Length: 125
Image 1 (cartoon, helix red, strand yellow):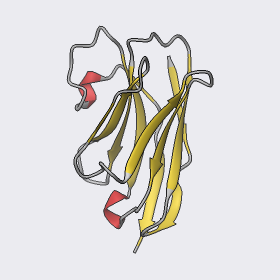
Image 2 (cartoon, rainbow, N blue to C red; image 1 turned 60 degrees about the vertical axis):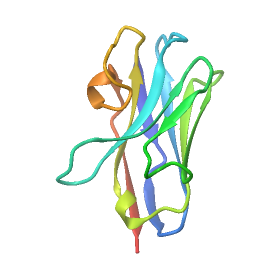
Image 3 (cartoon, rainbow, N blue to C red; image 1 turned 120 degrees about the vertical axis):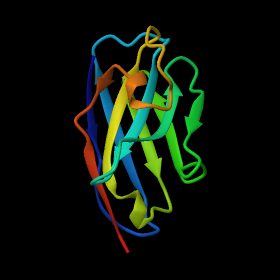
């Protein structure tokens, strides 16, 4: 499984961005697809995750209501719509895939088996 994240950039506070994660390789329906972010000097932080099978989604509290994860199974692509962006959302955003065999938490990086290369999001004040 290979993941390719894109769509990052520079945006003013209050603006929006949509990130994409193109998935190549074999994805089973039991997978979860997640987004994490990492700001300079900070640990990688959970943003959201969704079931590849049925679209169930879980969000970090600070992103709920502003960020929306979605997937297009036909295109093998996962999206992260980010609205009402704040300067503190500035980070490198990573997409990740969690297999059904990984017993780790949905909310931690160790729960995911495959990672994309990351895309930079910068929110100016």
